[in-house]
Picture: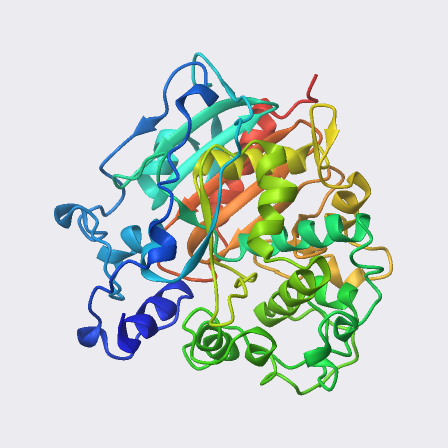
Length: 438
């Protein structure tokens, strides 16, 4: 794989403009990504089949005539292939599926769901005709209500998480705390990562890292000249030794910790370093042991790594759609599956609630009116709801009251898209079928 290829794929994945499009060629698939097909178990689903379409909005512009090729070229016609084959283009670590997938039922008839947007009542079909979603799944309890795929994608494709991986990282931190591997969220990061002892991130508490409030300067606006570009180069593009070296360049404190929210992917990468050092294994292996196997994942997953073998915990987890749904349903039940508590319930609630002593976290994304908890986006209102959100339209919405979840993967052109129609769809679904779960 050439350095030019790596530059192109990294910039695409984070909404950053590729400077020399004509020089980007298709890199070869890495050995790590080739292991395990991630084929879902057909026995894990009962009921009618999901619905697939080779079409989608502006399908020709997204590469339909080329059969959605997998090439590291920063043009929309290649995005469908890139976002569903990230681990064919970058080095990743395999996360084996569970020995026994957990059961998911399926509604015999897809419910007639609707939502209001731009003053008009719309349906799921309307939504998919208007939005470049590659996958859409709605579930409640242990039952899938809707499962749709566009642009030739199917239930064997591993869709990249983008920043949805941040919430997964936070949940693993909570498990590590419950096991005594991490003592407290008020410990400084350097207590677990000695290589950061002389840095501002090392002096920052895990709580402030979880809340994106370290006070360390980090610019993330997807302009192509911001700090996240450098983080991408230092981690998934493997231009540095990786590990703690990748976050050391961001070492200027301009605010007190815990004072102001400032979105920073580097803070999640520091949390990933804390996690791997604290538990004494790779993050991917810890995920397999503590989440993937217990929740009954049906497909292999992958997590992209840096040159040191450290997972890029701020992004780059690749998962089949129904396993995203399993994770979402687990969170909807405050970390419980059946009679088994997989993630501590107190931690899930703490992570998905704006703390009383941080009113500044109630609205941190004005376009959506969303607040922030521990690496998790939070809806304002009397009803507790929260979300995992990544660039270009990756999102999971969770309503614990009803056990209702929505999983959404996409190829939106704008990186930090507020997804207002997706939010309207979610609210419409909650209004339609989101009564208390029995």
